[in-house]
Length: 372
Image 1: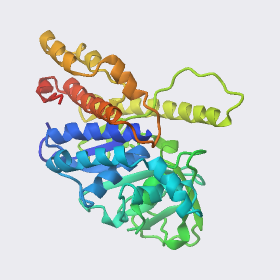
Image 2: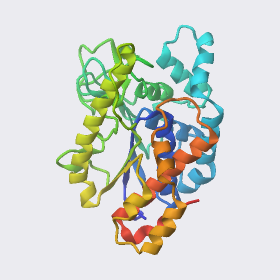
Image 3: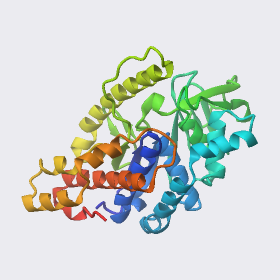
Image 4: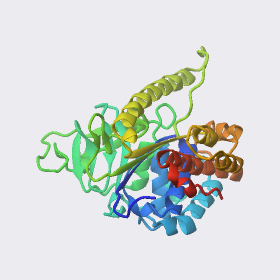
């Protein structure tokens, strides 16, 4: 599907378990076409961060080949997600680690329930994985990676030996539910610049990190610059957006948390709309990217394309129904383990979304649409 030298950038959104499984479906499509080897940069938020942390832990902290993903990583991901409920794990660990707050319990559950160990230095050098958070104090995008961690106002620390589980938990630290990750900055040496040339003379002692979705739920800042296009080192950008849909809702006089959630939803939706609009203008409409969104119905896409009707009918019969797509899209933003049927549904929805959007961008590639 892509040339051997094409460098793919992935942006994996937040959205809890729904996002994790949807992203796994996108990756399955790439793997079946032999393209995981093309992935060079990954930027993740919340559920997307949990997804990549799990994949790397299963594959001994190496980015999987397409064959490894299909034969080993994906089946093991399914088993772990279905059989090790992360929310129940956090509740069990609360007795063992009574001094931990919710975000640290999430980090510990990722370690003990899902086997996500190691620090940022165990990430393979061949893969640039950027884990996105939002800094409460500066309002900036704080990112963890093998090379550095920090934000433009706090500064940066180079080659941090920071636990992957904690970075992922910070990226998923949803306000008012999981809370903030309090980072002890005094443990590290900080610099003004991303290259570590100019030391900070008076860095903060602490900072508080929120879910990366507070800043950008798509996590594309490190991959794409509005008005200019893709960042250096990326030839094709795949954005997997598993954000929850927003419906009409009445104001609640009883639930402050429900109203805060609504404010979050409005902010995320508006930001996403602005980002996606510029993304289509600068990247996708120029054939340099794909935007894959939950709620995409295969037949709706195919009917608008100059494809023979018999092929549309054939693909329509084997793809998910409109009702199933809506069911997958509306799966709640939670870390509770899904049923086997729910897992397979969301996985297939991600897979089919990738396939039909690829058909749209390369009409002759409908042969790649393989529904298993």
